[in-house]
Image 1 (cartoon, one colour):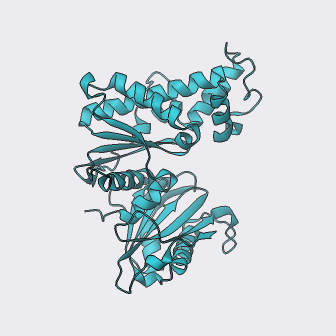
Image 2 (cartoon, rainbow, N blue to C red):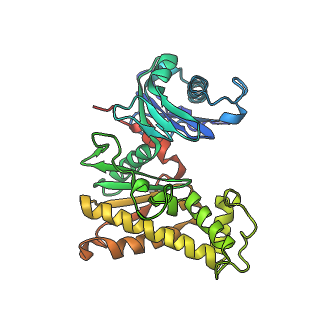
Image 3 (cartoon, rainbow, N blue to C red):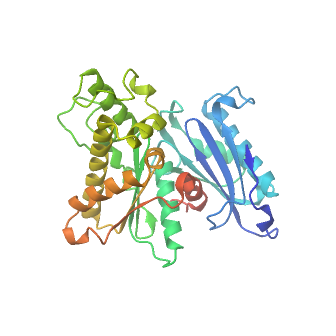
Length: 340
């Protein structure tokens, strides 16, 4: 599916243009932006499973081909050719090496050590910047804040709550990766060191998959709040984001308790990072945030304000919902600077 956007805003042959690509495990999007712009001129969407050109393969070469096809579709919708792009930015759902060249691991695609930057550069003939999807979203959110009414953006932590929990940091106007590339990975902080392997980290408790597991276990154990739970009888994997959100909004006691404890964990550990680094803002996004809405963010905010140090900073540090929504990674990808 292609959404043509406002291709008329491409004003001349020397207009600097970029393409952002948001590569997920199920779908990918590509969009053409004016260099530095937040609003796409045109975009293209492809679902991996339904791509007829390669039978839906998620082999790295097939996905690289699919990325370039999506880029070309977005360019066509914008009325330009690929050669007009000064750069392509890719936001990939997975761990990226410190040099920004290799997708170290992308579980949803079954990838390990894929040289995606080189694969797409060879096929597109354009320079490519590769970044983790939540880092790209953090950069998009910081860039949007920098162009807001006050045109000021401070140091920022982005927390994306979905199947897992991802995080990204912008410090001193730059994406901060750390020497090993793991900076900002809030979902990987240990919250329960006594738990068995696979249940120690924040995302094991507070992501969608963590909530699913905890609800399923409570139901199986005959938890005091299990009576009349609308999710009873479902396997954990069957508790979709939509079903969880519906049960949450309906006020189911078990779901409400686990969702609120998840929000408590997220807010508390975001506050730990903000205290440690002296941050100015935290942005909350991701599929679970979009489904649960502002009430979920408010619970995270409340936990954050209780935990941040010193207490007088509780109101000074903004804890907000994403401005760019599901487009944060796509916008951030197009705006990415090259890695040093």
